[in-house]
Image 1 (cartoon, helix red, strand yellow):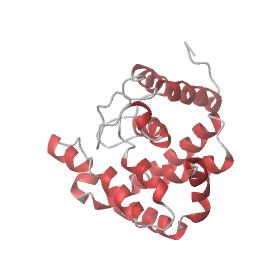
Image 2 (cartoon, rainbow, N blue to C red; image 1 turned 90 degrees about the horizontal axis):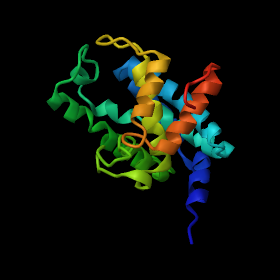
Image 3 (tube, rainbow, N blue to C red; image 1 turned 180 degrees about the horizontal axis):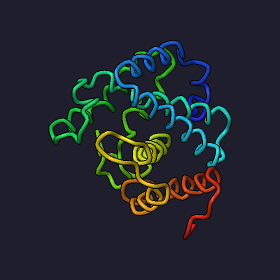
Length: 206
C-alpha cells in the first residue's frame, strides 16, 4: 500500500523548484506585498512545523507551501489584487478563486502533485464554512490547517493602505476567539506557543 507520509517526504526532492521560483517571481511582479507576505508566511510555517515536532523534510515542505500559497493570485485582476481599499462582495468572490487557481497551476509542475490539495484548501475552515469546498475538521489537509493560521496572522499584523496592523496581543486574542470555528484548536494552541517562544513574552491563559 502507498504510504502517504513517504509521498509527503519525497516531494522535496521531486518537485521542480525552478518552476516554483518562477511562479514566485511572477507573484512579485504582480504585487510586491503579496510576495513579501508569502515570505513571512513561509517563515511562520517552518516555525510552526518545528513547534509541532515535524521532521526536517516536513519543515522544508511547510516552508515551500508557505512561499507558494498565493501563487494563484497571478490570475487575479490587477485592479482587485492591488486595490487600495476593501474589496466589494463581488470583488472578494473573484479574489477567493486564487485557491483553485493556485492548485491548478501547481498541478502541472512535476513532482508537486501532493501540494495541490494543500493549495486548494488553505482557506477552508475548521467548522466547514470556508472555501472552496467547505471541508471541515481533519478532512482539511494538515498543512492547509496550518496555513490558515499563519496566513491570517501575517495579514493581521502587517500594514495595508486601507487599514493599520493590529498588535501582537490583539492578534493572539483573535486567534483564540476563532479556535474551534475558523481554526483547528490544537494547531491554534501550538501556534500561540510558537509565538510565545519566538517573541519571548508570556501569554495569559497559555
